[in-house]
Length: 333
Image 1 (spheres, helix red, strand yellow):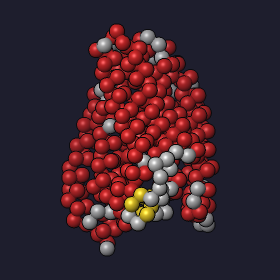
Image 2 (spheres, rainbow, N blue to C red; image 1 turned 180 degrees about the vertical axis):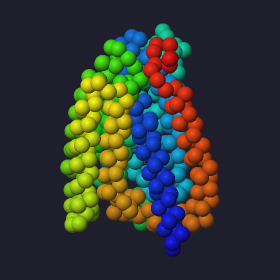
Image 3 (cartoon, rainbow, N blue to C red; image 1 turned 90 degrees about the vertical axis):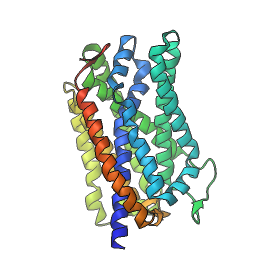
Image 4 (cartoon, rainbow, N blue to C red; image 1 turned 60 degrees about the vertical axis):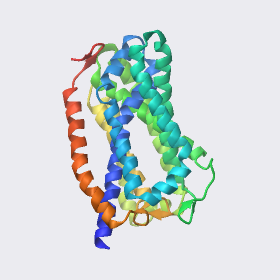
């Protein structure tokens, strides 16, 4: 039992890390797409150049997270996929359409307006679908034995829509702060203005989701407010407030700090999600141990993950290092 417990925790951490890495890395380039209609002329070329070297590599973490869930927690995958089939398929189609638009925008200048709209639409739909899927998971999934027991539209609720809209705002915040860090002059000033609005919307969304979540399930309420848990959980909203204040102060003159502090806000939200859900992979229905693959399968996969994850981290770090600095119409300089 000891090794099963340890391996399951390790795999839960690996998948959680992959999901978080995807959210913060692909989040800013989706955010750039969400802000795209607010940019004009050469500003759009500069914005796309800022994410061109890294946007497709960022989605590696989505593959790792989804593949890892299927391999390490097959029962959870078998229940979650039918429950969230519609938003997940919408997300994947949006990401594909967005990727096509990214490439065709340069190759088909006669229809650039169409591809710009596709880039924006794909970014918004992908972000909205991810937030809706998260909200649907957090509000609970009906399980019948070892299968999904709910209906086709169970994922669509006011709470899941709130999570979706909040994530769109959050990605817009990441995109705006990324442009602050990577651009100069008028575009940077415009990005600072958008970051303020996106920051307000993001904080409002975080506050609304955080206020509703403890009342979705009695177990959520106990994890957040039962004594002595509240002594630790109360630090999360306090840290969110401190980070938000520091973010607001940094917007006036700093370049890298707003982006890093926005990532900090996402990290704290991820911690809050962990507090609400752990140790369940499907809230209050299936624990990570009940959903885990057999021990030998976990060991076999862990060997491969131990080789692949450092390679992914290395080439990701190199890509960001190689394309550091400011970007212009003709690329990085």
